[in-house]
Image 1 (cartoon, rainbow, N blue to C red):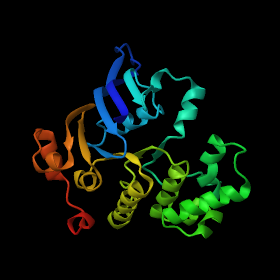
Image 2: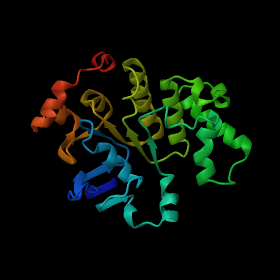
Image 3: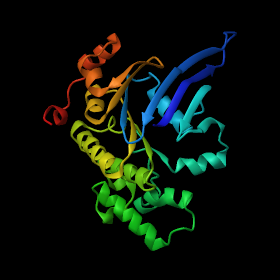
Length: 267
């Protein structure tokens, strides 16, 4: 059974006309349908600007679709009130692309990591219990407990992304949107984060939508791959079929244009 069902989703941005010009419409996402099964990793791959990050954020309703339907555990997300959506959001989290911009520089790591608990479980945990939960997530993402008392500027990009992952997972969500989480990191650090996500997916039984422009990285992580171009999914299938026998010309071009990272070539 699908955990997420996306049907005919459209996102249109309208720009105001200038100097008598007509209003212009841009279809960032154009009639996309996609299922994500519980426990699997779906890779969403395509070039920059193709609409893949927009689609990922629409799944969480961080961006409102223009039309279509998105169901999570058979609940229509687009019909939920704000309080209903807030209650459901504890089960759906996101890891952002930029580890530098996504962490509040004025908060200690302990505050950053435990903030989702305070939002979704107010007054349910003591200060000691919050500390224990944060320390457990630090261990899970490969950081020392002492990191909890430091500020984001004291960490490298890769370490910051680990903190962002800890924040996303502390609620034990069922679905995690990974919005190009390694594209801002150098290759060796990105490899560590990719391998960490692969391990966490197994350890926590996560369902992942992994968004990337790199076919090899998506292939390494994913059970199935959806290829997106100009707001549409042009090809979808199991990972082996898509990467070994791509049918769409655009998929073939993506595979040829993306070099194989060393950590994948050597795995």
